[in-house]
Image (cartoon, rainbow over all chains, first blue to last red):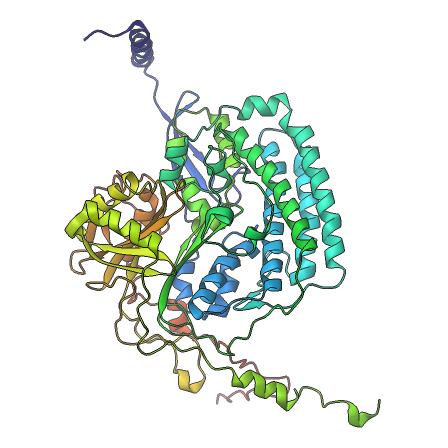
Length: 388
Length: 242
């Protein structure tokens, strides 16, 4: 067998490395990251085996926050379940409610009035902005820049105030009802929302000036943690993480059609690189895009009721439905099996972070220890969304 | 405004009350007409049938989505066909279903106890049917062609195993570990089957219908009925003799 000289040189290099390892008797070291670590939003534990500074294998240990929501849904009625699923991805709780309620509405044959659909879309996009603005600040924190984190929290606060004013809950709105919404928007909310969206545009520009052009940030993120499109999809990585790998797929545009995204003028952003920087960049653009969408919806908000006529006792007819939506963290889906009772027979909850994190054993192989932190931060997961 | 014009507090006008009560509870037709399969789903099914032939046992659709039940020996092949021929490069999830009706827990509906929504006591199977108690189902979709398909496979109750999808979709790894600990369904060919959420010494399979939710067994949930007494209406404590 003849090898070309490059392959042979590479083999010689590996052999030399192996000889040194044998001579010096270097052993792998096990490093336990977590369960408490500032880079993990919750309690994720990653057990990494190291050879020097490089990761040989990584094994995420999850389940510290498993609350068994799939079992609990079998013991609750449909209106009660929205309270539970608020707590899956607690940064964008409102967006969690939408697919489940939409699934129940499909099974019942109920349609929410247009005004309710618009307000749902506005609040979904607001939760997306709140989630991403925090990410834009926190990601910078993981590479050592503390200032953007405060900006992130400050601007998220504006959006959370809006959500609180409309729904009564900052984190867990529990605002969706089967057939519409609990109540209409309060007076003056629309003007306030316009004002906050202006602030969001400014703040994203600030992040772009502060972070994206920064040399340290670019060095730490460019070319780090590259997810090829095919591998990402096969692992079930979704949302902005997959779009950052160049996959032009967004359920808001390409799904079976939910909420009012079809009425809006917006763009799906992708980045070809698939590295940590691309994931940051895509989320930055999507924050702007969401703010643009919210302004369009505020302009075109139809009048009318926010609640359709539904029976007082919600009984959902026999059937199965799969509803998946584009949540801030990726594809969130519910497979609801109903047997005509007041509660579902079985609910499979497909949460985005679970699959996004399942790629870690593959992704962390061969990276340096400090890059683990930036990769974890750039994947952007919520532990409640992993553990359910 | 005089006192007479103010409606008594806490009472809704009779018309409004009647309007709400008149809305019928949506009941399915006793014999619903089978809807024709949407064209997109039919095309996907034709492609699957061409490759799997006898491997497909039954196919159905729900809200425009194709649901296909494949034979256990064709489960791995179905994943390969979905990935290679249908261009379904994206795996949403792999999970299980236990079709057994749950044993009755909590109280009785007629007594106003809504602790657990009463499910039908006879076993019925969902779209595309089932051969027995356990099923594994999975959802794959295409990021380029924007379609998806739900695949189901029957799992034998006495020897609950099915082929693993990890060689086809590496993302199935964690989903199958979850399904194994929650339903006790083994996946042949899985690279490292161990607990994902639960501690290693945990006994039982929590998502099986015969696994009780202990919190509910101990104390039924009061549910929709507000049973907390108003101040001054407290239940008199039984006097315990010394």
